Image (cartoon, rainbow, N blue to C red; front, side):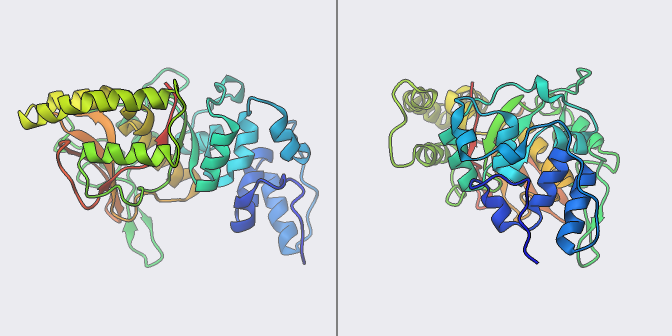
Length: 348
């Protein structure tokens, strides 16, 4: 039996064409779990009642013309476009247990072209929270606790698989006393930078085995593509600043002034625009794991953040094997075969 999903807009939903579970997840997030179950039963041929629609965005009327009609893309439209690669209020609530009202979401800062290109690449569109609705900062420890702690699940072979590295996080999600960053307020107090973000789910090919400076050049080339950044854009200004400051950073590293070099690197616009803060990476990792069932960084690789530790190292996160993902740190002149960077784009 061949059925057409009446809730899926066309023709801009490649995820629905390639992922058989995407319709079910999409309907669950938009119309509620009951509607998702109804759709699943309909596809399987089992008798069911017609799904009850909630008074939300009318997906039946969403098509290419609707998308092009307005200059400002709404979050609901973007969610429909990105499918399982969208992380918003529903996924955040499923992971951390608190509610974000859709009416409180800020406007998307990305153009239609940026969103289309990101969706075609397979990027995530994420709304990051820095605090709970009650004002509690979403530190690494708070996020670990709220998401269920560091309790293992079983893989297909029956092995225990942990969200976080057990030498750093205990079962409740508390950071252990002997974790290298336990006494570091810059890491312990780090939270996600709030707002919308476009980011690749995995480390960019070609970004590993490079020091932080060479990796930054790589990220600029990757983001720029085949043409220069538009004159006067944030990206163009960030690239200009980078070229001006790069000799100063090399001099600091040559003089072994690691913390000064890392602090300057972290403060540059190119790092703010194109690199993730540590808190954003952990936030994305947990929401992907808990709400989407997708374990990021399970290839053993780490992404290098723009967050500076008190010892002058730039924090990195990843290596999500069975023993769990871990927080690490490297000096800017280091290059590691398992250390890379994701493609991240935010607005400042």
